[in-house]
Image 1 (tube, rainbow, N blue to C red):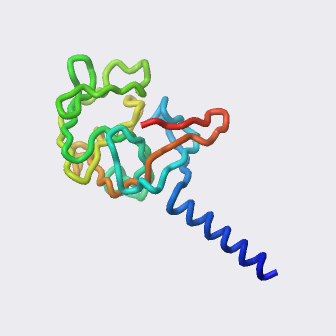
Image 2: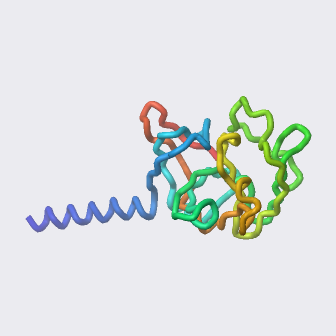
Image 3: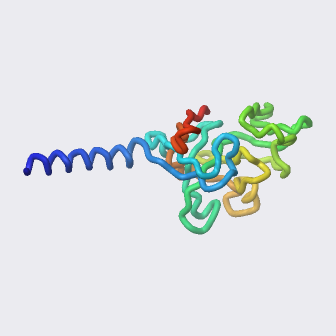
Length: 177
């Protein structure tokens, strides 16, 4: 009997350890990342990438004090990282990062301009500039340009990189970066 209890405890600790340190799931509450992620989907987040960000990554982060007052997890795409200059928009309506137009094949086809809001920002070291893929329906770094921090979120606030959609099963897919 004790052996079974010990095995169950080890299995439970292993599952909890994997969930806390390796991967976890989050619910997507809105359509701000459509068509990449849709409202109601469940996503897998690679926790081993916590505290890191690369341009193009889709990340989950804690926006407390940056995107809202309460501790709340957000999912957005990293557009700029420390040292980058991000500007909107080129004459073709594209974002520009470090003087080069940013190719964004993930944007909805209906979008004619990368952002309705013009901006030109320098991303401080250790921070990131984040946008939703559904730019007309996303609260993101653009909405906080005038706030303390200028819409930038510390990279240390990332919970991890989104790797795949797991629910609904019929929509399961890998998320490319």
